[in-house]
Picture (tube, rainbow, N blue to C red):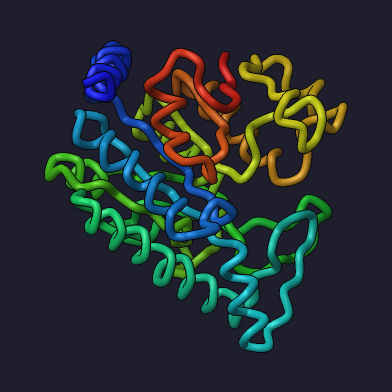
Length: 287
């Protein structure tokens, strides 16, 4: 009986948040680094399915850098990076599309379906959702078929929302030249959140959030204002792969998204804890 009462208490505590976010669009960036095992994958996608069942509108954008590196190495293609960006020549682009638009995307869709949800896997090319333009590295070097989002067309996402499907999006864009471009998944998540006027943008990573001391969860900053970010970057508190996530958060906040979050997606049910509890589990970046 005590266990049943405790379960009821947890549901009652979550109720105000369920009511608050009913009908809200939540864009979730699911990083490849969080896909460390089947259980971690399952609990995260359970959270997303539950969000849909209680009336929220989750949209999933995923990466997959580690899987791309593994397959390129297996095929004898050497991975090169310039200023943190993968050099994407034609053979590498073929692998990128195979991994992102195929293997990972369909794995996520299949698991959501298995958990009782309804999902549709897409790349940014489908329905002309993501228009991309070619970019060079920060140092001006040609890095091949790497792009940035120049426009988001939400028509296909609106159709899926009406039919109660969860979109699962691979970060591939289509250029005006008809070529496919590899786009940073963090940037794609931010751009889609803005285009859909999302209430929240959540990044699932393999770290607790933004920590004052690297790899020290006790130094976690539970809340960071956007005005503090330049100082934190200068002090190297925000560095490496965290920078594109934070930049996407700032862009989203500036463009109307209400709140952004960076949380540890390897923790069981971290997404529910961040959205449905007053304490949260990661770092929220707010205006």
